[in-house]
Length: 407
Ligand SMILES: *Cc1c(COP(=O)(O)O)cnc(C)c1O
Image (cartoon, rainbow, N blue to C red; front, side):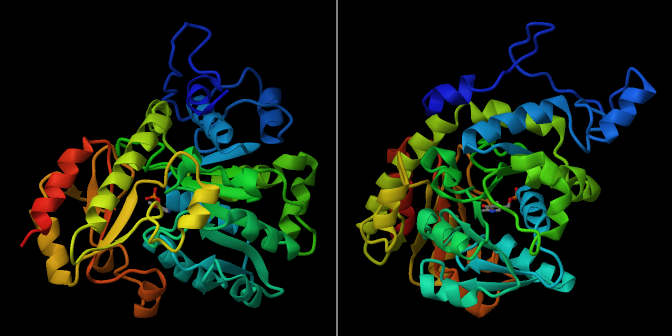
């Protein structure tokens, strides 16, 4: 099945008992058992079923299956937010004394998380991720994972996943990719060699900004060696599902990072139009970026433009567009604020991935806790506006920006 068909038909939806065409929201914290014996089996992974929604739930499982199909993995764990997914994905394989090698062009919250992990004895080295030598130099015997975003938010650098995964694997390290900005519509990192993918499904997967969640999807391909990942060894019997089994039997259930069944339902609805929305907003973003680039005093960063240093790798790796995030620099913070305040269609909002166009001034908000060097490395400047382009009629967006940019 092709992309849009698969979104609608690749996983069973609905309820055989009643003929409901959508998977019901199982709004129940717990599930009763037919016998004490069955309950014991459930708790020893000797039977499948449900006991408690913090661990799993039929609505959530239906959503996880759809994410697994979408990202072409073997299994997924849905979490309460993108940050919860990222935290769980990392801590499942990195402990005290372990290190992370990460790209610099990250979502501000992720940079903050890496700092928070320092208190638990986990160090992160930030490197220019397209520079193989810099990545090699950052790897040492304590490194446990390499991390990057497919399209860095808001740096908009497109990571060469194939090359980076080959490099990671040559050091027997897994590559963890945050695919939130690109989505599986543009690229499926697991098919290019990445080992684990996380998505903040609060964004394009949900699509309407009506609920927060995140998902971890595993390729099942990485060989976890006993010396570096000792805690994974007890899950070896799960084969390709070892990473996911460890998560669900350990950190995920014990940190209580579960998604609400209602949110899983919203996400399944939203996902049906992921292809349509990504096609439209990527198309709009390219048209808006081209218009903005023609405006005097405006510097535009968008992987779809030839002026982007990542245009070639974007062409090679992304399919069906270049995503819907653009950043522009307008000369000063004052000008940036003035433009934002003058725009009438885009709302000033800190997230991305809505049907509607959203704008934010990252330097004073999302990256408020980053150091000056981190901001520079992430290409965050005080005259920069990030635009998350929606599915409006692009002519209206262009007219609005034209007016707002005029003095
Ligand atoms: C929003 C975002 C996150 C965090 O996701 P939440 O669902 O808000 O916790 C992580 N990574 C990227 C790239 C994001 O855009």
